[in-house]
Length: 377
Image (cartoon, rainbow, N blue to C red; front, side, top):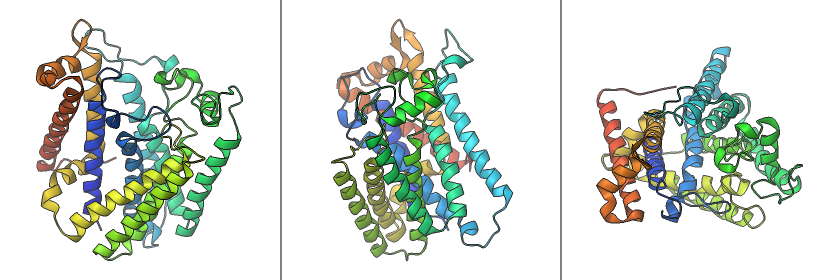
């Protein structure tokens, strides 16, 4: 069984990621706040993209691992090897994007990363670790125990961050340097290998913060497992919507004493983003699977079918535009932005450039779809 609405949801999430990444590239203070990540506590549309990817991965697990969880196929060493292999590839791609390609410059090429300051964690690294742990949990635990595990992770993470401060910093348990997760990252990964934009003292995709991100995947799996048992009707869409609204409300209530924060990946953030994921999935499910309006959403389905390629290629594209200069102190991105959309003003030119880039990758996705090229890991 393939959930077409999930491909559409994935494609829309991918397009939103490209929009956010490209629109937030102009100089600091000259971009729309709703297209930029929240500086610390709080959230914007940009902060929904990464958790949506994790949530979608979890839903996909319910279908890709169905023959094993249902008992129709034996769980062998080979399936675990496939999971480990996929996790290692994702982690390796993340290392490459973080370090090698960012340092590449046409005039002063750095083909090898600085190993002494290699950033270890990142988006794909977190996905790789989360996929590995969540997959093992799905293959070895019952749904009831997966519910319990997700709940224990969220509550346990809340208690740890609330009551255990960083040993080497007293700024406050929910601050960038004073939270326990940052301390664990400094202790295990070491500052030299953390995110440079955080002063090398914390990492927005750090190791400890990957723990609640695993819960995001598990909640996605539980959604998919539930969906498989439901009839394809508007009643199912309505239930998804109601579950989503409930999760958003709980996340907002929890925000009162455990702030919604993407960089900390707080438990309230997990529930809020899972809620919005459920609401978004409900809309896609109703329009695509129930009402069969697929022709309206075909471009997003096509993009969703090659999500990993579009993700990697779009990040490479962004970084090459930013690190290569076409004139002194003017990157290729800045030059193109000014030439194509400078007439719209600084704020709007970034948005228009981002929209144009989304259409560029839609075109690439369509060409790959026509050739039946699908990159799988």
